[in-house]
Length: 216
Image 1 (cartoon, rainbow, N blue to C red):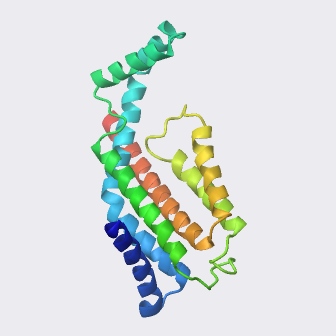
Image 2: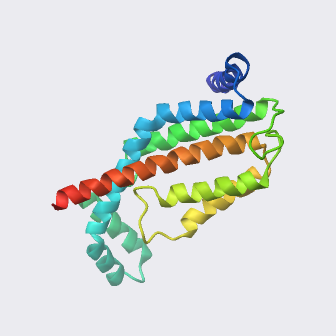
Image 3: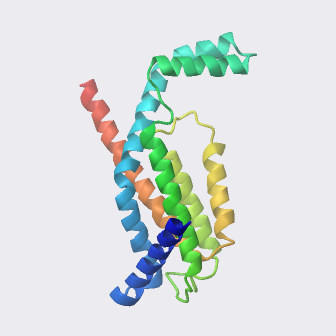
């Protein structure tokens, strides 16, 4: 717990350093620190996204075999799961590899750290249309929910046939959470989600160019 408390203290002091020493506003201090944190985590995040994209392409390639498995075992869900995993193993498809696991862990640690740290700081300033970032703002919550939804559907590994609820539910959870917490947390969440969205857009464009190049 000492390490975790040190981490929280580091975040708090960093945000306060940007505010009191550099002279940026409290909201901009949160945004700036979030961007720096996401920049540090970007290499592992990009590797995880690339792995998701490769898995998506590999799964698309074996779709006829997957459909056959489902047709043969339509009343045996356990057999479908067993045969599907065997097929994935045969084609070296790993849904959760080392990079993906590290990415999830690092993003979670950074996110929970920011969540706790921001709640320890006493804010009393406005930002954009938000009168006080120490209080919840419904408009910000809705905006962050929309950005979260977009960042998820734009991820390189998101399959076209994925159930929309898998993207909608996290966005709804995001909105419900943010209407009950300070807008300062929403600013962190918005910055993080926008960063993820931009990364996805860049990677999607890169992979699209790669596909065109390989096809030519």
